[in-house]
Image (cartoon, rainbow, N blue to C red; front, side, top):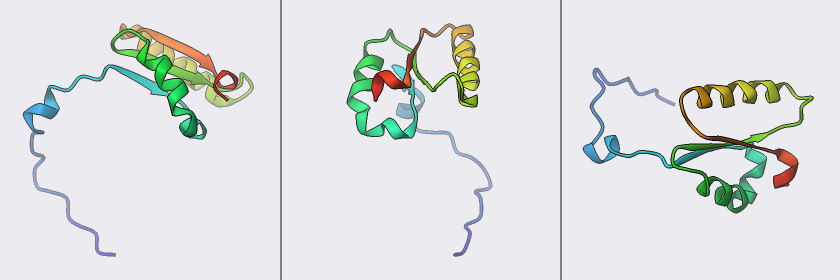
Amino acid sequence: MKQLPLPDHIVRPPKAVRRVRLDNVALVPASLLPRKVTYQTIANNLPRQGVLICQADKKERIFHILEHVAAFFRQKGHVVKTIPYSLLV
């Protein structure tokens, strides 16, 4: 497959795209995609710019990474709600 060259310059996105602000963010594992309705209702009930994080088991390495991600969002002024993976399964 032929690779396309990168553009010489990056254009500015349209005005409508620049004005978009996200209501909230949900960080969940891909295995929960079939249960999107469950975690989406939880995320939609968070305040604006809130963050929902689905935590893995404490034994897993990803648990510590998600703890750092949650701390980062809290430091930036976001409301962070963490829920265990077992609650959504």
